[in-house]
Length: 371
Image 1 (cartoon, rainbow, N blue to C red):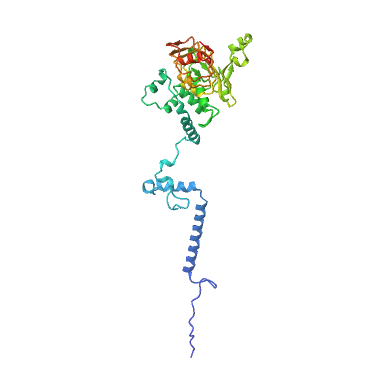
Image 2: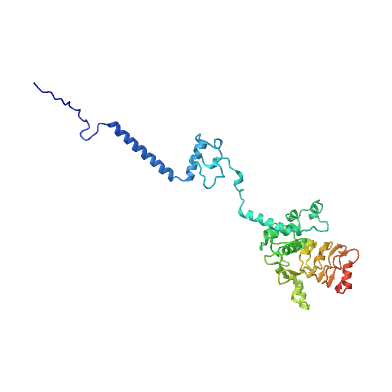
């Protein structure tokens, strides 16, 4: 009897020896490896992409591809602290409604801010010494008729000598004085005198002036005014005096015009502006040149009343206003000027009587010459 083989014959492996028959498990592993490789490559590409390119991709999604734009997005909080983080899934910040106050105006630079700060500094210092002319003048009419005079408005009005003087100090003066500079008042007052008496700055690009030769007045080159030098150097030798000085016994200093003398503290003590064809008025702010000992403005075309502020120049020894067109009464303000030796007021259009204060100084023997 033929014996039976109890072991059943196994099916042969059609892939040959060494190959698994489980094909579904092998395919799954291969798919996982491919996906992992693609994911890794995408991550590397995204990390290498510039931020601007990422923002551009956001823009394409939000604006053109139906993604979310500003109308669907809550504004990004600009007040995040340094330790706060922004959700990386949020769209770029430019798609939020911008807070306008956080962005500077176009064309506004730090230099503009510096000018405004310096302007405030100077206006705060100079405004308290500003005074309106006593004589009605067209360029000052709106201020002279105003119920409340605001000096700051006058200083910013470049149609007036005060505004022109302030504009020079603020914008064109090479010395760039600050509000607490001890020579600020002196420099401003001398600049104001220049403009109040018909001065024209040849270096002024705004062309405030017309030809001085046609209407009287002087230009900045006449006496070296409005230069970058200290105001004690605003002086120039007079050509007329230079010619006649050959036959004169006057000293060399007497042949100059402008600021002819300062003390050791660089404060003006002598101001000579004679024979310069000056027109206009003598401003009240002359009082702030309180170290002035000699004031010579003879033989010009200055008009209006003599300012009562002359009475505050208690160091004054010499005053010459003769040969002008001053009018009105002579102010009775000289009693405190106990050093005053010579006063020349003749050849003007004054009316009234000689002030008693001048008569008193004459009687006391203080005043040697009075004309």
